[in-house]
Image (cartoon, rainbow, N blue to C red):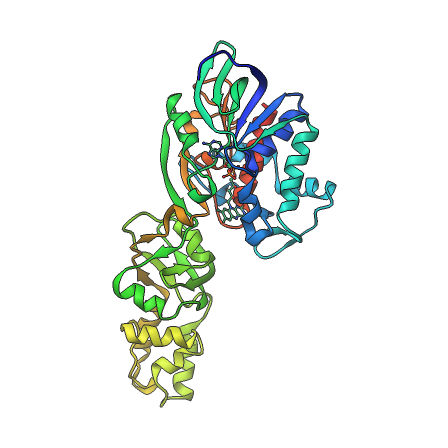
Length: 398
Ligand SMILES: Cc1cc2nc3c(=O)[nH]c(=O)nc-3n(C[C@H](O)[C@H](O)[C@H](O)COP(=O)(O)OP(=O)(O)OC[C@H]3O[C@@H](n4cnc5c(N)ncnc54)[C@H](O)[C@@H]3O)c2cc1C
């Protein structure tokens, strides 16, 4: 497509997701004429499906430590200037009610659609324009900004804001567009990888775990870099549940993960007391007061715990050794379910190339990257939306 831009805006936003729409409203309120373009037929589809349809829109415990990035300090500035309370205040103004589910995670009382309506409504009120079902082609620089070819014509803008997200859930329209634009303008991309994603197993581990599909238990899931005390769920392909999704964001291919199956229990003392009271019971059956019996049977079958000895035959040292084994249960995932089910993309546009206070490129004035496409990845529990709001707000104030 040739020609000079036929339409010009102060800011052109690519991506009508959480970050792009929030940016458009805030920048519009600051007096900018904003156009938002998305190739999808509907805006903010991930907001719609998030939190089981009730959008876990923030976490009241948000701190920079809840985010993974090659530069752990990068998110501090934006997070400090737009807090969870700032977003809650917006919901209050729109009569959107919410509740805390657990661990500071805030969900809508009703459907997530209320948040999408708020985002689109605020954008329109601030004078913003939204074009859906519009594809984006060549992007280039001009003397006073950017020239972007789209299926709706050539658009010129002083600012180009990339809010097209990461690679997770391709069937919802995820693309690597942000990374392509970043590379085109000389930015580095930190290897994108699926995060907040279930683990899959092969061979015996897979069939073992499949035999107790649906069983959930509280654990501490650990890697070299982090530990999460939440529920773990056995699935027909491997392991899932919040503890596993959280640790997956820190996992590297080929690494084992360590699971404390006795999280928070004084198991050694309880088993020794049980031995005194019930010396004739089997060791495996005594464990059933601590763990679900289907899991105990599986662990005995795998040889992870001794199945046969009576309590009377277990020395205190032997009990301690089994407790130690269950607190440090090591398993090696074959991989993850990948982009198909990953809730987010870890990695992305290297923060070294961006100003942390504005999300503007250090290499190309007027070019911004916000939301999930940036190498800032939140934990499970509302942190990723908080990053989308905060990074968009920072860019809009620039
Ligand atoms: C199933 C699921 C549940 C989730 N639940 C939660 C939750 O409860 N709480 C939480 O904090 N986070 C949750 N997340 C993560 C959260 O949805 C994302 O981190 C957040 O949506 C990122 O916002 P974004 O605006 O950066 O990107 P996105 O929301 O992904 O928006 C990007 C937009 O860009 C568009 N786009 C992409 N490529 C192009 C292109 N080439 N041309 C034009 N448009 C393009 C897409 O169509 C999309 O509309 C969940 C994610 C998933 C998948």
